[in-house]
Length: 174
Image 1 (cartoon, rainbow, N blue to C red):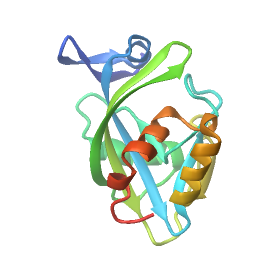
Image 2: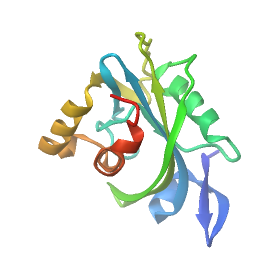
Image 3: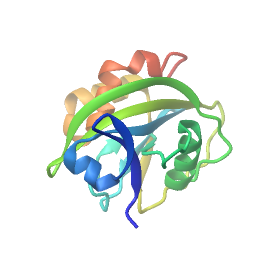
């Protein structure tokens, strides 16, 4: 069964197939998480098998909630599924809406609940190879510099977050 995500169809929130939502560019719900630790921001490189933006670097994790799934529950679930990160308490930062071409005729038009996990301790990361091919820590300054010099290495949404919403996301540091 194809994954269904909450999307607006004719102004009504409706369960829609994930791929169908991206082909049609439907506005839909999403969740993004930034893990911030002593070494900076944890980034993930999307697995080559992903159906859009494979191999590009993104924030720690991002996904679509299941129908009727609370955004915080979704963030906790996806940190575990993508990166094996457990025992953390994501804090909601803000809601962001963006629309971006993600290649191959697909459009992300997301209403995103952004969460941050801040830790002063080392965090155990075990990437799921179906989702993530690599991870790395980077400071906010180094990330901004790399985004400016090598924009094609990053997902469109990471550009949006870091260009237009970084002050709200990183309100307490990084």
